[in-house]
Length: 480
Image 1: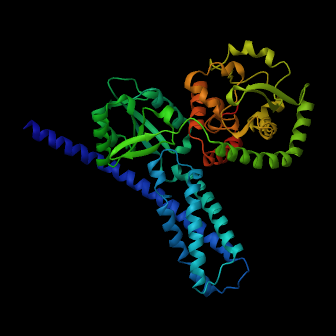
Image 2: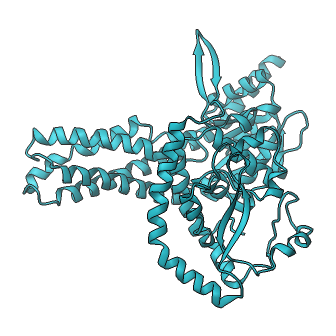
């Protein structure tokens, strides 16, 4: 009798959760359709632009032969995973789409060039095919960025549930709360062994209450803290999420040290995780240096008039030198003089010790409102214009465009053990610390981010961080 009641209770629980699963599918389908419609509009606009080049006169009847290009490109985008990444990931930005988008457009442009030769469209010349490819990448990226920016308003927020706690879960909850662009609301947590919920979230129940909580609160994603859950229980819960059509994300136990560039290796059915060796070959360092010079030198020349205007504004606003030079710790512990436009009064360094008592972070000076900053300096810092002279540090090889944050010697002394591997690469003007929150990131977490950057360096990651820096700087997020 009791067994029959248990079976009926389990069936009722599954039935109760089914509407939540339907909502998940509807939300995901809506997002995929929005991206597909946006891509279609962008591809059409790119085709019109390319065909407008008067290399070969074409009639309206001839242009109709361009219609098959649309399903071709949408199919290629699908093959490259451009409609599935948003479903799998919490943080999926348009910048992350660019490598796959570039590959798909290159293949598509080649197919279009071959296709046009055998149809009334006629042969595409180099200018047309180049314009088609460049405009398609730019327009698709722009439309996808706009769709993702408004997706939460159009199709609603995704509701998430955290299972387990710990430091990494705490950090994840706070980051999701600070970034509404992720489109996720964390509604609560399920307790594991009576552990406190991360981020002061309400505890919705125990681990075994997943079915009922997911149904009652319309949960669409479950985040598991792998450290706090034993392996058999985690495996069962992941299986239950699949049955309920709930998306699952897992915080790995080695997340702080492995990072994102771990290779999954297989030796006769035995899985290994291949971790990058803690060094970069000379060729990689040469590529990074070449990219620094190719960008920094033209930028420095182009921005020279702006730098002169900013220097004049600083001179008129307060007494003192225009430039501020401070000793920082660079690659392999070597010291160098980091250059900035002066944003503080001339006795700022002498007042540092007394202000440390009011700092909101015990590891470095962090104030809600620093009284040493001048009027012009506050504006310069908000837009990160005070960092522009560091382009000269890049040209001299003391800094890189992207890299670990350059610390002053007193702060560097606090970095010990494996964390000092952050000094294996040249410090940068921007990096993970700049993109993910600047002064809002605690000191210890910033050091871990720098370590992850060094361990997982790639050319594309530098490009990605440079692209992500622009909206952060323009929006003034995390500026001190």
